[in-house]
Amino acid sequence: MAMQTKTIKAKMKSVQNIGKITKAMEMISVSKMKKSVAKRAASDVFAQRSFELLENLHVHKNLTHPYLETRKGNKALIVIIASNKGLCGGYNMNVSKQVSTFVKENPELTIDAIVVGKQAERIAHRNNINVISSFTEFSDYYTAGEVRSLLHAITDTYSGNENYQQVVVAYTQFISSLSFNAMVTPLMPLNVEETARTLGTESSGDAQKFALYTFEPNEQEVLDKVVPSVLMTTLYQLLLESLASEHSSRVMAMRNASDNAGEMLEELRLNYNRARQAAITQEIAEIVGGSAAMN
Amino acid sequence: MSAKKLHLTITTPLRTVYENDVDQLTVTTSAGELTVLPDHVPLVVPLMIGQAMVKNDKKEIYHAIDGGILEVRHNNEVVILSDRSENATEIDIERAETALERAKESMENAKDNVEIDYQVLERNIARELNRVKIAQKGQRK
Image (cartoon, rainbow over all chains, first blue to last red; front, side, top):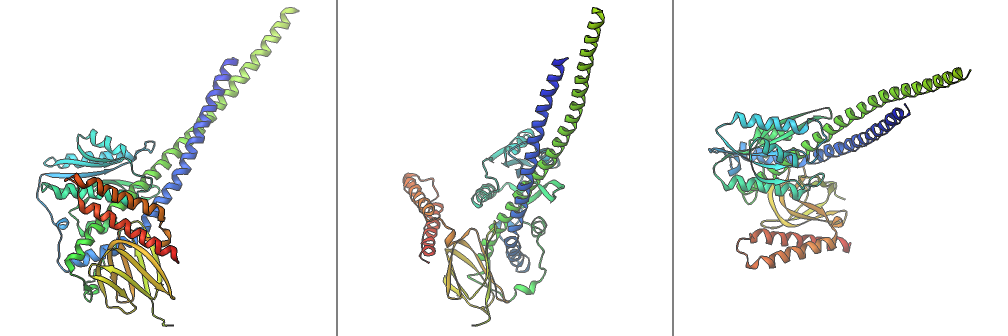
């Protein structure tokens, strides 16, 4: 009997420790999520301004750029953004489902992938997608250089092969800390309405606003600079939204784990008390039995 | 003092680097240096790797600009959209110098290699050189 109380005690200790770890992970993820959301918000000014320029030059002045034109072809490039680490609930699974759906819905396309995150690599393998390049060493909140190297990988692939009809991104849209939504969104060719939706920018809708502007040396050259900038912020925001979703998904998973650890601890405590009581009762019974036999 | 000021914002895809009311701004465009004073005509112009010098109450503040776009709006609002920008005081000179050395070294190493994209290497050198120069300006203050 003494043996049983001991094993229960050991079990309680380990459950308690797990609870402490999950609690700590939850708190770390809360702060990381807040930071990702703040970083995303910090890039809004740039997104809004560069988008306005793009809209003005492309929609109102009818200028174009190779990245803006639709293409014919039988290939598609998918950029999969998922996490490096696990323990974040259904986050990676949801991205994976979206990728599978995309593959199923486009049987006529040969799909290649560029992946961000170790889990994304697995998603690509699971769906039998050929991985062109893989970025798994990115730092916590993505530096400008890292985003740029990813963007270069994408644009080089896209402009290097005429057969790429489009580039899409599988990411997780961050709605609030409780709700996020994995989805596949087009990145290239750049579509003004789609971009506005992804960036959350508002279309100025005012053609007159830019009418008085002087463009130097000419409008086309400005557009050539604006297009990569817009792509860059779009990509950065998609990455950060995915990051925020990953962390808040982890917060939820860890909160559940902590709650479960608490419940389990309660149950174990009850069992422990019962076992201890049983041991005492038995001991008394033994003593009483023993003294009765002596008499 | 003249009441009119420019409202300047220097922003990158990652964050807004600088936002303030200033007296004047000098930048390097593809066609040469350009100084913007209040009531400037609305203008959009691409920027080269170079500096943005901001003058405010006789004080000069330098920023390293790694290319981008300058937008001047009619209501004295000025925005610099740059791929990368830093305030002169934020640049760590030693690190910038090592980065410059590294860029030069990879250019040396690339001499016998035909495959390498010289433009990229040259751009790297120009960018790091620019940062070192501007960091030194920031330190003199």
